Length: 316
Ligand code: GLY
Image (cartoon, rainbow, N blue to C red; front, side):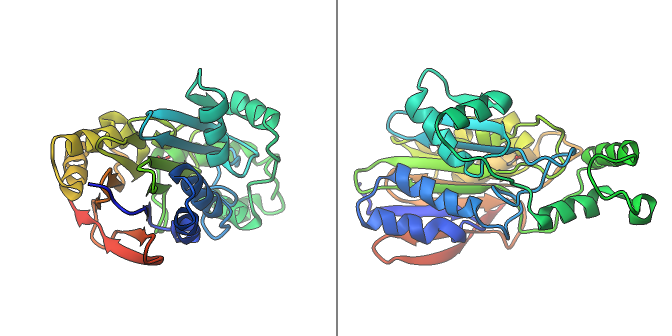
């Protein structure tokens, strides 16, 4: 059954979803709509889990992961641990389009590619995110008073505090996490995009589920697309987004498919357990989301109406 164009997104996709919907209404492709919606989210400095202003790793460096997947071809482009470029979703799209012999570039290679492709470098750590990093990682501000740069004699204490924090993985005040955007265009194409700065204070080089096909992102135009936010290590361990699409293929409803994946993830041991959430959009325009906690929502824009609706996710 054909559906009119639709775009959905996780919490805090509001920064870009209406613009993505506007493009779809003008006949743009889902690929363009998803990229634009996520670019705007990446530019939202009030959001500390994506793009510019994203929270840094344990060394105080912002490392970004993003991916984009096209449902008809299952083509996938992604970057992991990308520093110094503010739109990882666009670099991921460029991997998909101009480097089809590969799916994922990380770290230095991803930076080299972004530069070759003409993307502009930018400082990703804002004053606010730098301050949040300091607040979180320095146990006693007095103990390093006067040593407020990252390279300072207090570095050993600082590094130890960072490592302790990485081990404890204290959850941040919400709403937090990666941003997912899923869109179906008037041509019947389905696209899923994911962008994140990953876990705050993560071990340098840690790449999460957002950059991985099957884990944080999966899209198959025969059945649907799915994307995850939250504790990426869990969606990697259960290949969460792929599980949801497989469940759609078995005939489960969007909500049932999302809930089934979270139920599987919940059976695994994980001493850093934190919230994992998931969304899906079917090839005929149905959608749903699930979360481990009540009060979690997702955003939907039916392109014909052009209004953003907030929907509740089912709770595991
Ligand atoms: N889900 C995002 C991350 O774990 O990095």
